[in-house]
Image 1 (cartoon, rainbow, N blue to C red):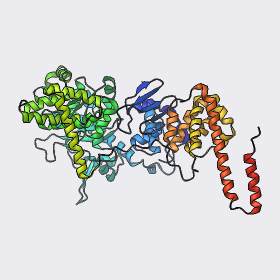
Image 2: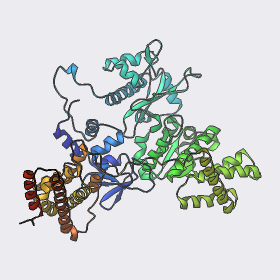
Image 3: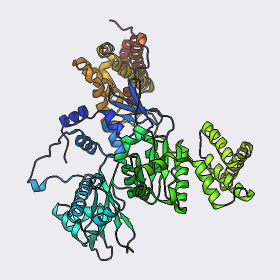
Length: 609
């Protein structure tokens, strides 16, 4: 697609409420006139991410990210500006006109990501139709044994892949997709030796996999053979839009329920997740891939503070619980474990016992320490000193993941009670393990692991054509922007000042100019949006912070603060001009020196009003 018309961009901006859009990614909580959340761009335990609905801006006081609704989508989805506009336009019902030129057959091809989204959506429909049109097929019969009603099949977009080697290939070609696109999107596989392409999902039950906003990004496909040749499940390989470690099955259905109930439930697979939803627990999801990942844990942390884990009771399930604890506990999440009676999985429990049995298991979830104690007890003798020592070390290794000292202290007391060990012994073990870690680091010559880099909260690097702005002038610009956004009369006072006529061409100056221009044009209500539009061109964290925050000055100081800032700009420029003249005087010819002295005299003369 070519350049998007400016009127389309502004129409999308007007319709895409920033609270609604960002609320689709993180759990927002009202805080006075704004909204707060845990930042989606860096790990944090205390919410420092603020959204200003009046100015349609956001800013994180922790990492310095900020901007308007377009900038949020660009950063969150890793998209360039045109694609962010397209994504938002599709959400708010704005049609972006296609550029004309050439025949309709030669219409511009959408970017690869959009093509892959379209590819996966088309094949989700294809698999759904194939399942519906083959009620006697293996997939339909299997779903019948699982007691899945038609409405559930439709809701979760279950389907069936044809058994042929080229059914998907021929269907995709008929829709205008190339072999290369279908291979990239994981619908086809390519034999690297022969170059032959063939259908990736053949004669399998298919599960559509969504991203957070509900786009189909890939598939998981279950074999219905007793001894499948290529594994029980095959999944879409990694693609530009399918990163299995960053996906949670059924998250579009679970997002609202998570926010309403304040918790998430994790299962191991798709059928378990579907059973939990049917049982009345729509806050349930499953890791997409071989295990729970750090990215998936951070996704959950944006929505909830409590996670219930419903993994299988076998040894593999116990290891999965332990791995999840290592990721969730550092995020200060409350973790409980749902124990399924008889070692069954949630799907079997639902089919045999119905919603009541599932509800009983969920309501009976135990804390992670109690779960681990019972698991230790099942493996050995809790009264054996050696076994108790191993359990103690294991518990401490998890307690040490907690950076919050209050939380660690409370869990330490709980561990002492459950394990029937004194708090002193646990505290001593914590200190012992910390000493061992320090020695190990010192012995290896490695320092403690560095924290994840956080983007600086300072301004974006100036463009080549921008003249460097001195710190005093930049500070004055930012304060004037804050004041101009606070009150229309102050904005007019600033606009009338001579200093406002020659503001620097940096992001702060352009944002302030946009506010002043809107004010002088009688469009003060749109001043914030005008300033926000500047950030779409040139991101600047400090400008974003001023746009997303309320004015930090008391109203009684607005006029004086504006006057002081204008004086700072005037005096700084005058001083810089004087320094330049004096520098040139040292090298100038006699005739030029007279001109420079006259200029210097003008600068030094008191300003006449």
